[in-house]
Length: 136
Length: 309
Ligand code: SF4
Image (tube, rainbow over all chains, first blue to last red; front, side, top):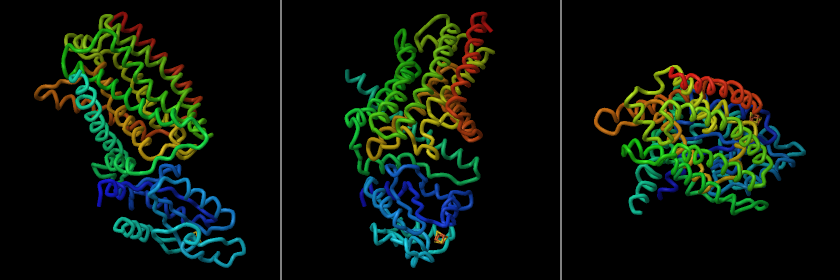
């Protein structure tokens, strides 16, 4: 493993894309920044622009409006980029899978590196997903 | 020639300042984490960030001035490093420097903010332009207070424009921060430092929750790594300037090295605590703060130092 990819794993900056989420997943993501879970221990940060991102975290169901935006964000991001499908909605579509505007799940649109299931996933599950991502 | 290159590139220039600045940035993040009862990042985190950014792809804007966009971070890093060399050399080698290097340092410390602004405008991103306009207003508001404070320091040192004379004056007559006007100057320069480093409460030009990193919005990969390095160097250079001008400079032999480190850490601690206990100001509030209060304090300090208090 080269120095560059070693540093890459030590300093993942996360960009959060909320699709048509019910907002519960988003709150659980913010939970990871709190003192109890503190993902800054692993060098992770939430960033505000896709140009700085190393991880594209997609939560919520992807409908026809979000799909183009998600694709565009993926193309705008500097590679290498990891994509994480977050929550039941991101992984499979969850309770929205049969809706008439549904255009997902995420892995039909862009390649996905890790899935974190749950509705919403607990912070412990998020940390477990992060550990899996780091050991990949 | 070889000697100057060594000063610029290795000690006390680029490599030394980036390493020290990285460590200071780690301590800034660690103190922030402790204030919020978190554990905080590992010690090497700033260097992991740099390594990762150099490893990543650099994206150029399609509609925009690409050359300016790429040149801006290089100029930021070089001028910040040069300023740091001029600030540190008189402490490391007593008597070095030249008459007027205080003014040169003043200009060099402005260039990084200016280049961020130019890079943001060259990227053609509307949020970047918004950040650039805020950065411009911020520069206009703090520079006057900064030059007034430097004027007061020049008066206190007996009308000398050279940093090594200012250090010598403090070694004879006690540190400047020990007098009433010195305390006022300390406050003024501390807030100017905060604004120059774009830390909360003066981070409206990059406000990541509001305009998505503003001036840095389009930067990625190596170009952003250069900006990070320039910011690490600035995080070292500005507190070092405060130590040099107000707290008697850095001693370089024996136990005084410990004192130098403590002075630096004290200022970083103050900056970090201000940043953690304040909300972000609006740009008009920040301009009012500098134009009214900081200029008032600086002028008061000039008057007090003219009558030697
Ligand atoms: S996975 Fe569940 S909690 Fe998350 S956005 Fe979908 S419905 Fe909401």
